[in-house]
Amino acid sequence: MRILRRIAFLAILFAVGATVFQNQESLGRPTEFAFLHWHITLVLGFWLFFSFVAGGMLFLLFDAWRNLSLRWKVRKLEQELATTKVPVPPG
Image (cartoon, rainbow, N blue to C red):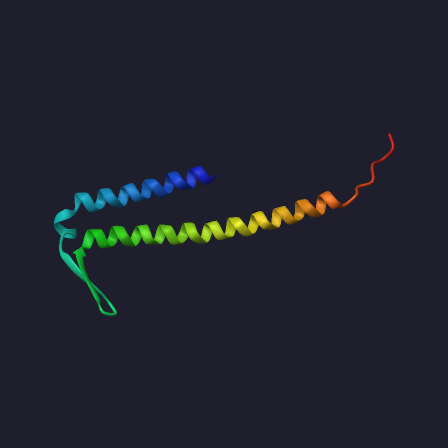
């Protein structure tokens, strides 16, 4: 499942990159981004590409946190299972 998710992420990343490359004339307009005292001017296509990459990284960060919490729960349950004594039926 993890491999399929990574392949899907790379495929979408490639599709967005191809879209930016193919639509350079309309996405090639300079766009200014202002945040506090910073003013950055880049091509609109790069802003779209960077925003997609940032969204993907945030998704992977939250997904990694969920995976860690699930691993902790599984480890705890394995420890509880190892300490409990299950009666073995005679036979």
